[in-house]
Length: 319
Image 1 (tube, rainbow, N blue to C red):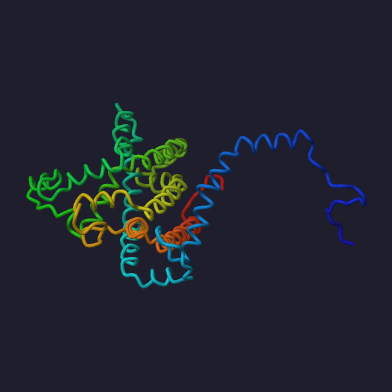
Image 2: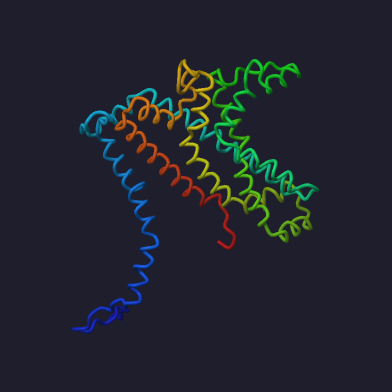
């Protein structure tokens, strides 16, 4: 006869009930977080469910809702600007995010070296990340000005003719990537915290065994900061898929009256910019809601794939 751990239920005995004190503590706790609960339902859950419903409708702000089923999603698949915006965003994710991680890691390695004035250098590297996005983008519009910009002026001093950075469709996205590399201070700080958490005994033991600087970096440092790399990678991918402010300011800066969002020639028409254009310029809220949910699915899939792949290249100490 098999033995089980199922507790005996005596007939006629009622289940254990909460004491008055436990119930009072529960209601007290709910009262303290009631404002958060109301805010979550009002500003998070309801807008999400509403946008899901709107994505199956033709909804203009000044017109009543019309249920059209999956037509918005079908039209998106047939929309060439949708694919263009997805390509532009994918370009930033595939090229911009890894490049920013590499630059951040190298800067963190340099800032981790014990030298006089170390704290000053750390502050200098971090400062650009706290500059407002609009201000930093306008600053880089001046730096990358093809005629009088600082960068092309310096290139001309060494005999190099600088490109038409912001007005050339080929160079527009690299210009935004360059702008992003200027403001990687937050990622540098996270990497720096990870580097300082590496046990020095491992580095000293490897050095005594004759390991070179490169071998210590490749075999010890990079594996031990791989969880931080995973975190920065996921955060970077999610943020880049929602890339908006810099591209919006750049488009307005180079074509305030002309071609509008996505200038030049839709090379900076990123997914969030196109979503904003459909929802708040053309007032196609249903179409924009469908775009938002497609973006949500894309980000979810990318995040799951990154987490699954991390099992092969992420090292957890003691795991």
